[in-house]
Length: 96
Image 1: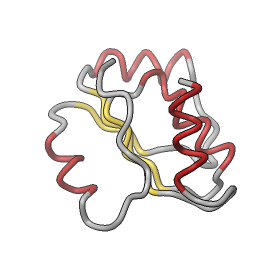
Image 2: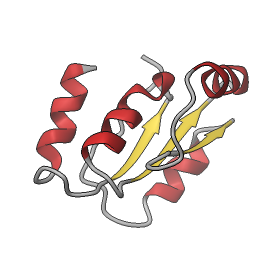
Image 3: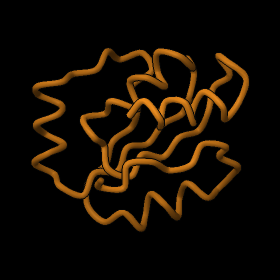
Image 4: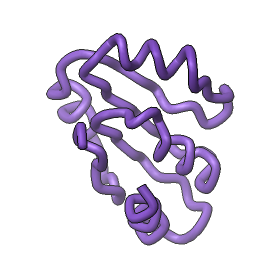
């Protein structure tokens, strides 16, 4: 996870908001890091398992500020939608 954080750090100057697509939420760990270090970032977390998504929402709640949007089900739709514009951060955590 630390290496993925370093990649985010190098994607743009410090504090600059990013558009980030998380394929597999990973407990939203990286999404939390982006929200804390790059306020105003637009994030989408796509999780294939609805039960995992519910568990994360129940056990690891996020504050509302900087909260990434989250979705479940097929990954193809979020990936297609994310290509609407430039995204300097690579999509990490593909169900690692």
